[in-house]
Image (cartoon, rainbow, N blue to C red; front, side, top):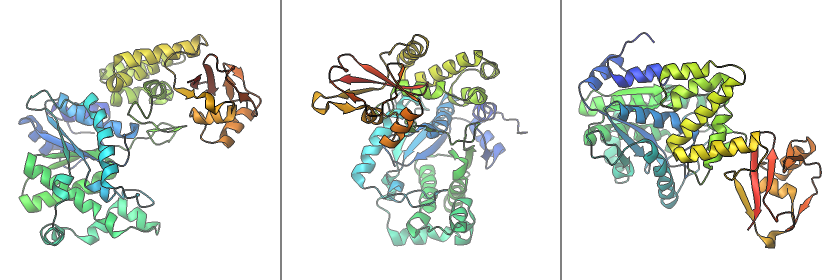
Length: 415
């Protein structure tokens, strides 16, 4: 990156590794130093929580506000009814209005931890829903006023569409409309709220450029786009996934301890980079921690886990998670903050295999049996060798600890 920014926001994006590309560095930079500006990111409501893969975008909005500007979180109440085809191999399942609204309610909880909506300051954030303008569109008017500005030839050339067609996978007309609707979101946000910037992952580049072109054609306004890199871990895995599935941000879908443990298990090579992206520690401190070697890097990972967990769940939750982890790993105890499965007496006796599955340590009975056969499962820190073991009320007179490998644990108690 050779551009030398004047604005705090772009400087932060470059310094901390957030920036993949920008439609006009100088134009955006000048706009940002001229006064408080608005930027948005759209989040479709396809689940009741966002996962760690969305956290880089949330942190971009947080830094945008911390550098004096106004973030807009746009809930896709309208676009979720269509589904984003970007880089997918198949069509998203269509959700009904009740499920979409329930998902939006779940997602809202996360943003309040990162972004200030209530201060009354000039740069207090807005949370909007694009169904506000999409639900009442007249189809013929929309085709005539908006559709005429889009070239099908150009849309077919976008990588998100081209990759799907190159693989000879079906792309429905419904999905093809998505990029037009997202472009229209940017137009409406500019018209209604003066929004000048759309942020997003680099897979959204085509959609962002569409919105900029549309707004220039219809309103003759200058607006901008800025993207972050699509993040993978150093071993090539997609960010936001773990052995047991997506790393959700809502506490009821992934406990603060499990969230903390995900960051504690970061690969050595990723520690410095993740500290810059997911915490607010000074960059030189991130570099220092990331350069530690041997056993010292483990303390850097604990710092990473504490900082990220504190932002989302609060400092107390982070401290409890660290205390539990130290008790489990250093003292061999059970800890009081592990994921806990409560079993009713009516369900007893129950097989150890079922308990391993129900506690989330394995996805299936077959996987649980393989874990036992390969000496990867433990019961109260002792190796489990009998996949036919039955657990009765006597065995649960006090909580038991189940372990899968060295780093994943759960408690089972009688309820």
